[in-house]
Amino acid sequence: MKSHTIARGETIESIAKKYGITLEELLKANPGAEKMHYVGMVLNIPSQTISPERKSSEIQHVQTPNKTHIQIEERNTKKKEDYPNEKKYEVGLYAGASLNNNYGDDIEGSNIKMGFHAGATARYFISRHFFGDISVGYATKGYKQEGAQTSGPYWNDDGSNYDSENKNTMQTSNIDIPIHLGYRINISENLAIDLKIGPYMTYALDGKLKSRGTFTFYPDIHSSETESISSDRKIKDMHYNRFGAGLDVGLGMKVKEHFYVAGGYQQGFTKLMENTKLYERNILISLGIIL
Image (cartoon, rainbow, N blue to C red; front, side, top):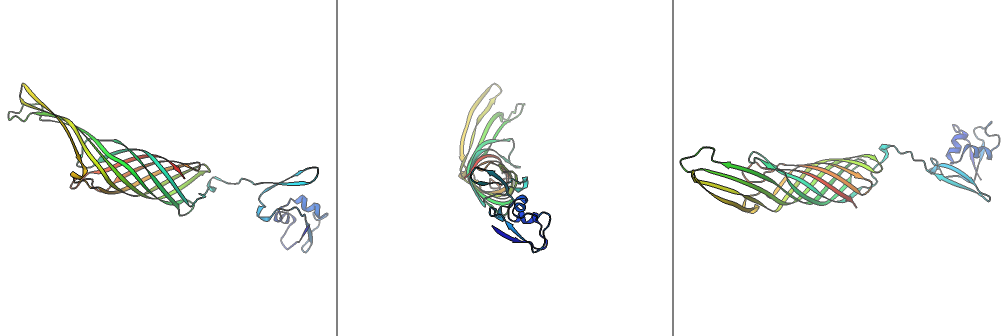
């Protein structure tokens, strides 16, 4: 059995807490201490004690025929804001669909073209909530465009009477490298929200512009001649700017320990074609797994 000398400012309650025992156990080992105790008084400390590091535990005594067992039940006192990220690093894989389009002064009537993307992400936590990440992925991009042209509803005597319909489909295969600075909001042990923003770089590995349609020529008011339009032009023959950069904004949700759902928006700042005001704009939806 240990002993303790009461110091100035101490109470029997604080002494019991210090040694991880109940007040009843301390008084049982020191009869009369409840009514009279003073500075310098030596108290007996029961031998069955719990270390000060576990003072916040809840102690229960279970009596058995032969001996007493001590059971420790840790109290769960965590609040919503007490769920810090336990890892400094996160590495994950992702894949998903994208809604791709081009915009600018030199394109009209462009429509969304579905695409695919996949890659890997490495994330480092600078502090409890702030992090930086970088991804390397493969993505298909482009747009669709449909249009019609005509010489007009009136007959031209010079013979330039025509109608045409065309459909253009642009698709490129790219390597994307987005870099983000983000902030994680810990909702619970199994749910966290990530907000992130940063630049991205992209490089077009390959791609082509497919054009399909018809051209109808009217040599006179009673006859017509129709030709089919079908051409494929590779980006290397189009003065296409393979390298690009822009802004990437993302919203992610970590579910439990290994699952991740994310949405992103890319706004291109570099021209896709030389001497044209044509830029890319993409919306990405991803599912991922954290390794």
